[in-house]
Length: 263
Length: 204
Image (cartoon, rainbow over all chains, first blue to last red; front, side):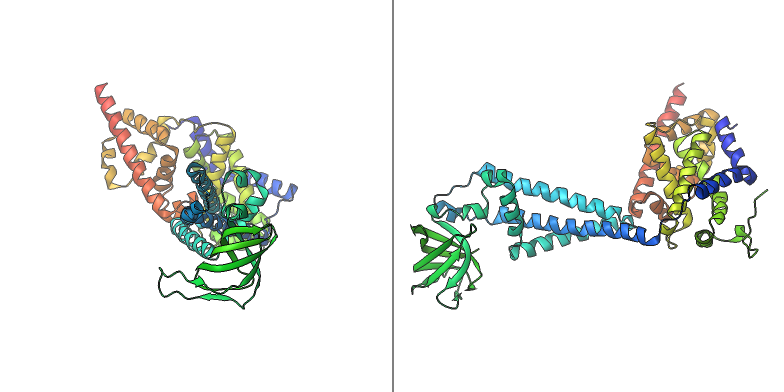
């Protein structure tokens, strides 16, 4: 025996005449409130917005992952220790973890936006795997081309806490009084300096004296004096390239260089 | 008696399939009445089984469902079955209604849904054949209501609404693999709880 609720529902449904009243009610409501189907283009646009958000978040997440990769693999602690700069392990670990946490948040947000797109549920697992692969690939490309620094510059310039408490590549290599200088080459007395070492253990010397000018990240001009300088890079450096220099200050805008590294 | 709407051309609307009705509704809103007529009872039952709402509440939910469906008609993709599409809207509306009224699904009286037990065709559920006595049916219904909401939903869709995996995937917007996993787990959970109930009954 069915209870009152069930009977009520079935009685309402079994005779279409009865729920024709419901139909009329809805049709009247549609007419009275001038309800109209949302235009197709609006729905397509809404879906495109979700795709756009997803793609932007994937790019941002990749950028952040590239910073994390740099944070973990590109510390140059031995070089920094020679300059008397000691990295606070805990603080450095927290800095890396900060970027990892931001990366995870962005990735989850990207997945959420993807899940909001039409029919994403049909390919959710495959798409998640593909997104992870794309994230890693893009992050490696960004890392290779130093694109991560662009974002790090924004953070350093806009979040005082970050630059005060976390030693970034930029802040570490902007301490000329400690022998660490970096910037963009604005002048070089030769067309370029090219290095092609025979093996990885071969560190070429720059025997002849070359005049180099650089503009550091605070736009200060420096004259760089080379003298038996070690060159820790392969290929060529020329005007417009960014470099790191290890040496000591000669005067307020002259720097004696011992080692040159590509930025 | 079934209402037989006709188009100006004199076509019998009840012979048209859902996709044709959707296309026709976009030109003439009155045709939407035929779609409502076709799905009113099915959706009412589904909402009731899912949530145990009262008839007036079900009608409120259905109003929202049909208005929403009408507004989003252009969003309906003909590659998807219309039935799955409108079930999806119904499912979401029913869940939203429960959430907005801060209620959990209401316990349905045991004798109301014994058709559920007989609609489970899976051989792994052979033990259900033993369910002759009313007392056991009462237990089965209470198990259904106490089971996890996601499990209850997939069991309802699979065995009461007789939807296939692809349709359930489209309704719940989850991958097909997840549907299979959920159904498997739901059956395991159901069997486990039923065994405990049987033991309790024997002890009594």
